[in-house]
Length: 434
Image (cartoon, rainbow, N blue to C red):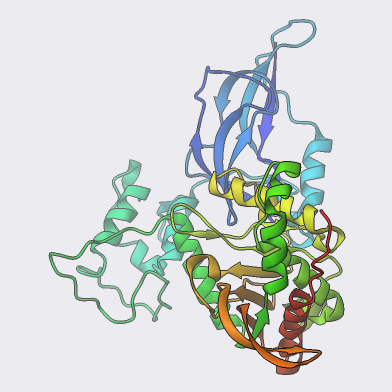
């Protein structure tokens, strides 16, 4: 038998570290190759990590709650070698594997990851030790180091644990610890005005994803100058085509077709016409994206939203987009997405019509500069031009709401873009084949 190190894998573009959520196996358990061993959280998604080798989980190197850099060892697996000889000292992971993980990291973080460092407890200026998890909680809640140093700890040598932090946060606004520190910017869970709470009120702790969403929404409104333009599109051709072909589509492909693929196809075509919508901002530089990667907001059973990404969507036909939409939506609702599914988006669409809303003013996901919300499709009387004159007819109408970053997208561009998307939807060919 031989022992090999299992490394923290790279779980998506720009991901440089992950937090160990739960070990699904314990030391001494038998594991199969590619069997899920632990759950890891990144700033994008929670995901299960499979075993790199089969054998026995000999030693766990990173505990639950630890933050571990990509490429750092997290466990030792005892495997059966070809000659059957046991080796009690762990075999280091191949340098090529570590170098590959480091090379895949962003340029500004490669030097940090060149020597992987697992999460260790961090000593502060007051001589007290704080784990990365505790420091992350403090950062999210706007707790200064001076305030943190006053929190009593129940751990070894009076160290503050996660439980200590959660207990403190429950009573923080009622019995704050007096400290003389500069004013701290409130976090998303720290109200600027003291709330009045009665005995009949229910206090619900935000889950990790809700905190993350809230913080990102606040950050986006702070970073981008949001402006929204609205256009009403006639969806009659698409509605009629879908009604006519949805049964044949299901028989041929084994799944349904929603309206979302039509929206995404029209957006991709419009991005080709107006490529300066497909950009991001870094400081005082504009980064123009070549790939068209469209994210679609998906509502989860928990009520949270997640945005998986369809890459190079302009290279797919309507059926290809539909298959991607169904696959990502199903995996999102069953918590089967991986970090790569959420990375690299250059434009986003949100279907608020699925909730019965006619329009919305969506918030831009950073670092993108625009997002489109599509409303409910409703029947309305409308003036229709015919060869024999104008007539009043019942048409299927839908509002498009286009929010864009006015720092880099002017009203003319933002307005023309959403109008072009509407044009492509209205011009959909009723004779389109499956």
